[in-house]
Image 1: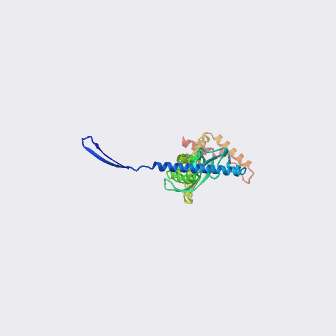
Image 2: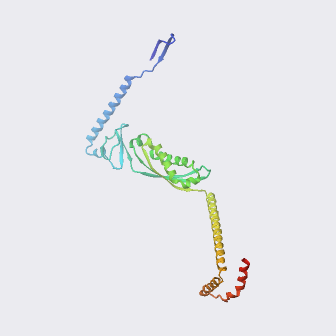
Image 3: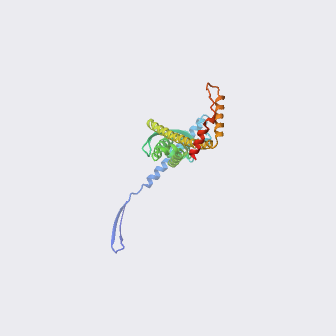
Length: 296
């Protein structure tokens, strides 16, 4: 179709135009629609005649039962028929109705171990488990060819993407945060498919053998360093206690003698072959006196 003409512009000139349009064949479209409806009507009538001729055996075919945890999406000659059917019994027309069952229960699957390069350039192998369910049966059947397989592939790629932005320490210490991040990303991506991701759990993080040995050596060295510091602090405290005890004993010779006798008593109480030679403390009194005078 061609349209042409002339028009006056704002500056006072004249502008001519030629417009080409492609006219739709309305009569042809209406004819095809009427023919399609006629074919559908003939198919429905023929199916009902077939049902009547094969009664009562056809009752086993025309009635479908859907469980409480299922929904049925019905296509009549390729076109979607209303909403999902079920639970319970519903009626279908043989030969022209196609029924697709969708399970609404929560399904879990394991994400295979993924080799991931972390933010600090460490290669780790991580696997996870994903729990999901169908929220919209129509979208799960119409908008995606295989929602289960697509969800599995998306979970594996999301796991690699999320872990690639984290360091090794964050992956080992923040598993719950990583799980929530993966769940949010998966739920947002699968929402147009009618899939609801309920939970994501990181199962295991496997490190290379050499890295495990290095981390074990580092942890052992840190423990040894802490043990040496604790032993040194104990020696320092014990030396201070001994110094205080010696100061107290030097102020009273009788206390030193009592301590000496107590030690002899403890040794004699043990059943061993130790030979004890008691030595009177009075013999050392002049030495103690001279030592005290030298200190004073």
